[in-house]
Image 1 (cartoon, rainbow, N blue to C red):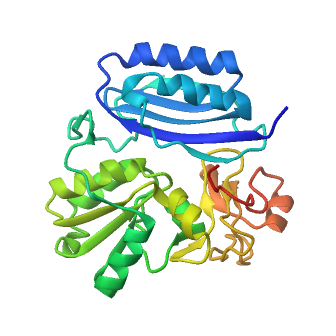
Image 2 (cartoon, one colour; image 1 turned 90 degrees about the horizontal axis):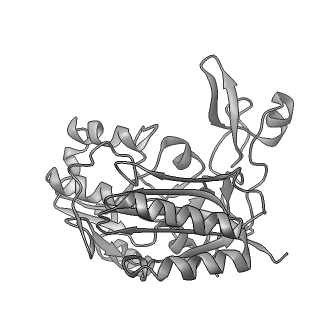
Length: 298
């Protein structure tokens, strides 16, 4: 078997019959032995799947044969062969669950009214030109930003993406409405929606990091504005862009520096937490271990 690979992509485009697309995607992935998670809605597709390299390549070719998905920005990363427990292909009201399906509008070009796109180099240029006036807004959940984030970023206290709309509506960030706000997330999909929601609420100068943290790491690794490790939604739990990532998080049990994330028992049951390798072993729970070496796309 060749080296296992994982692909991540999304496309915002009107899908008149997402159930038909679900059946097709399910059949393609099953026939190729791929595992992962694919979410479809009338707004488009959000896919993360992995398996044998040759099979993943065939999946990408088959998916791009459908015209609305032909220009999908495919992000590649190394896999371990068992990064996903199974294949899940579902139709939901949203491909990213912000709880605002009726507010989001898409056409053949993508999300209508979203933020201006910045390449990684565009981002550096904006920071050079505008300095401390630029605000980085993390569009991910709290546990993700704990182990990695852009330097000086605002990290909202959200447990799920559903928490963003009430937070924006509360006025907590109204003081940023006249400042340049750069949103970022893992691969870019959450920021597509978040920036549109922000503009709908009067934020005037909103940007999104095109391709997300993954594309930024591909270009600048750990030698730019990014600090720490990247949380990923599979059994790897976190990955690094180089052999010298900053370690910015602390173990919830002993306080030692770590980027490990694990399922951690507490009084509310099993939940994700930052937990070092020693405390992880002592607790006997499942988690990440050291960050995987790289998510650099092929």
